[in-house]
Image 1 (cartoon, helix red, strand yellow):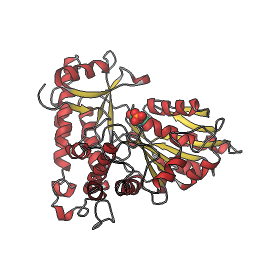
Image 2 (image 1 turned 90 degrees about the horizontal axis):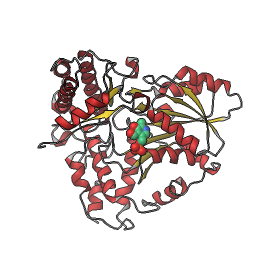
Image 3 (image 1 turned 60 degrees about the vertical axis):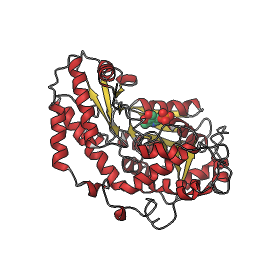
Image 4 (image 1 turned 60 degrees about the horizontal axis):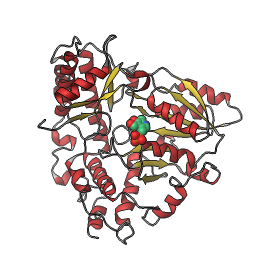
Length: 426
Ligand SMILES: Cc1ncc(COP(=O)(O)O)c(C=O)c1O
């Protein structure tokens, strides 16, 4: 089919041409004297995206799942207890990861469509007088249900219980798209991957660790080799990796960070909110509901659309793909068949999303759902028209002098030579 595939799964997200070009390069010596010029600024700039000055950022040739494992094995020991809530497929898998690594998980079963149950977390921690619970595992943005949890609220609950447990936050589908402030929220391990808000292919696990979490390495007895942060810290200190890194992905990440900083993280978050709000208005105009049970849980990176009883979300996805070259996200686990998901994260604007909404409408009509063609698109259009900011104010067409500096680098780095340039010169 001519034209581009409309990729609206909630990751992998669209990879912008700039990042594709940045990755398209010959291999080079990852032990050369210039390689740290690429690596060090990436690790430093990632801290800005995590919202930490005191923590440390890591990049692994892995994915988000690998970062669950890294966070756990470097801080905990087999037999340790963790507290977690299961409210979607990814919180389920995070718990599964912990259990398979030998931890004991106290699981709060939570209806899918809700966020982490903050009061119950506080109560469970208050009841744990001996402080046997060593960690609290939370999924920030539950991609399977389109639900975002208030991480500041979870931190408040932990503090209210005066509990020393570490806070582990999976923000695989949040980081780089939704506000994230690791230091302010007291997050000890922040878990992400390259294929969502960073607009890249999968292949990099991205991890932020607090100093408090890193100090636990000494006592953590889980076996670790590839994911040992000790080896990584030692190598990263000189700008290298303990093994062969993925060079194209590192160049892609450099470009991704440049793009995020050029737009400005606040603008990136605001854009995601606008896109998501238009999508939610379309769902309402279709006469359907989202999976998130309360508006406070609405995700700005993925909308999970409940299909009426008697219809199958998988049929909508199949027709959308076969007839219109539109990729929508499937219902996972408990939600299989009950919904389809529209991913709206990463390199995306209003008109792209309107195209996907039009395709979803057609696919729903084709599968017999009583959706009026154009209804959702019109609702989103009205919202986008009424809330549109001039392009320059969004960073899109800003003249070069208003951008973050000659290298397009992050805050406070104006005027410094770009790491990218230094590394290319190698
Ligand atoms: C919230 C969340 N956590 C974890 C994962 C697993 O990440 P990966 O597929 O990169 O291993 C995903 C993947 O979509 C996710 O959405």
